[in-house]
Length: 594
View 1 (cartoon, rainbow, N blue to C red):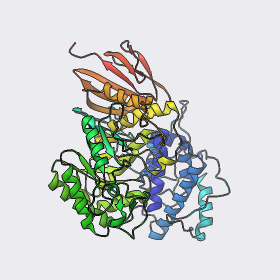
View 2: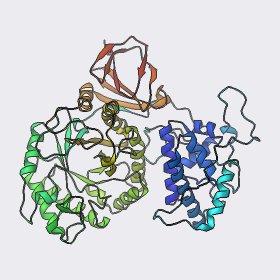
View 3: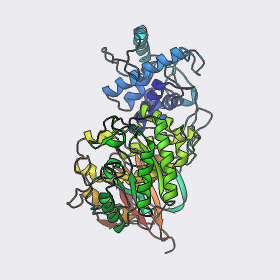
View 4: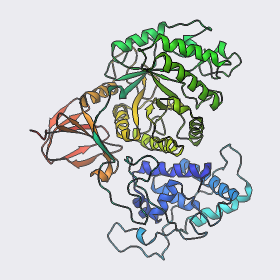
């Protein structure tokens, strides 16, 4: 079944709530009285629930607030309208009209007190009734939903509080890793109501080095200063290096700022990713205003101007700039107002010019963002269909948590969703560079010190966890500025504790090779706990952390040393139980050769 916008949004919202709650499909089924396969089907988007009551049950168990319930209701109403309009409301979607949403025999919830399963003839306890002042409903464009369906929705909502219905589906593994190719069935999927009990890491590989360039940093100032703590690469944007600043008049270049930054990075042995964007006024005099006073967001009137600029740039910096990102944030009208076809043509033209002028330079496709929203993914899909990725070595994307101040682990859901999009369009897995947050980063309050210190390190650890999803580089946002929720260092000042911890993480793992990552019960950890395993000179290293709260884990007999992010360390007794939390820790093990 092909879902419309409303159905897709509903499935995404439910899946995000599930991921945030840390509960498995089986746990949600037990607490809602729905079948495990039914809950999975709703979150996957295979089926639109016939009643909003079913949606509300899942949402409330996951801790949804009133605003989230309103969003779910709007998405559900739109999905129902789409099914009616497209004829999908008939009985061909695998759920008999009016069927009960009771668990099947294999999905019977087992009471936590050890008593016998509940009587299937008894109604499932319903959640609290929805408020009478139902939320306003509109489609994706903001138009009102036809009033014809209003009372049908009210009836559906009330019935959903007391009448369950049944569905059959194929469950999927709800872990965050997954070694199967993107788009292929995840481990744990099968043909019945019983989900396989699979133990082990989410992915495993032969020991592989993590290139230092993985630890990237956005440099937001033009002074030429570089971070005062250890990083592996830099991205130049908001650094006085836009096209409009490098070529303020046709054919008249100002390289001084870029020279200063590139030379400074080379002294620190930091590969440079230069981001292109910001059409000069002279190249599009009647173009749309940009968020930058010196630039337009429209493409140049003559693409020959773009060609000439790219050629001059790549020729001058041959062997000095590692990679070129061929536009920033085309998802926003503040930086791009042009057709997808034109953007794709500019990417192709620039790619050919760079390949000829500097064959070793990497060509990076534009940083699309707003990918938590359907419109953002629709735009990315449209760009994919132009074939532009054939001309790029890497896909640059904005891959933040759902909110700029949200837990870094939310990125796991977004990356897997994007890779499924690429896979569905025939690209397979695409090498990804995470270039930063969405625009809402400017609207968030500063994190408190504890959260900031933990977030900064977990930002990179989540990137390592997503290695099997082809995430190759993480650019933290941003260095030099105090006007962001998490400050790592301001220009002219010393690193914050968050910045120092980023450097400490890299020292922890210097010379180590990553072998596997996993989370939760599959690797013997509590739900919401993560670990990644490394090898160095015959010794095993394990990093542990949680998304929320503290848990105890039992260490192996070879565990010998605990390193903490504050720089302290202590000896470990073999087999002891270790308290882990939101602050990552490193456990070193004795060499098997000793």
